[in-house]
Image (cartoon, rainbow, N blue to C red; front, side, top):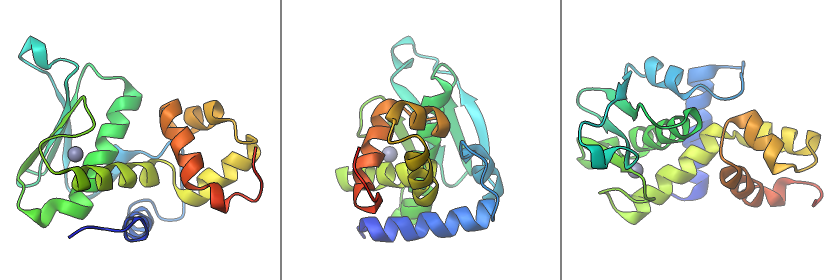
Length: 171
Ligand SMILES: [Zn+2]
C-alpha cells in the first residue's frame, strides 16, 4: 500500500495525540514515543570501520528495538529515529523484519517507502500547527526554526515549502 501525504499526516496526528497528549515540548522527543510503543532505543556502534558514518541506524520490528549510530550528531539521530518511526507506523506489516538506514536517502526498501518515511519524519519532528506558529513568530527564519525543532536547515526549509499554502503571507 502506498500512502498519500494526507494519509501520513493523519497517522502522525493520531500518534502524537496518543503519545504526547496535549503537552508538546519542543523539540519532539522521538525516543520517548518509541518507549511508549514498547521499543528499546540503544546506541549502535559500528564494528566495521567502513560502516561508521554510513549506517545511521537500524530497526527490528520483531525485537522491538531501535539502534542509532553512536557517532551521529544528536540532530541526525533524531531524524533517523523519526524516519524509522515512520516505518513502524506505516510499514511494519509489510513483511520486513530489520530495516537499515544508510547515509544515503534510500536503504534496502523501495523508493516510495523511503519517501513516505521521510515525509512522516518531517511531519512528526515539525508538527504542522506548531511549525506554522513558530514560522510566524520567527518571520520565516529557517535557521531559527531548525534550532527550535532540532532539525537540519535543509529540513526546515523543506517544511516551509510543504506548508507554504498554510502560511498567510510569504517572506
Ligand atoms: Zn528507511
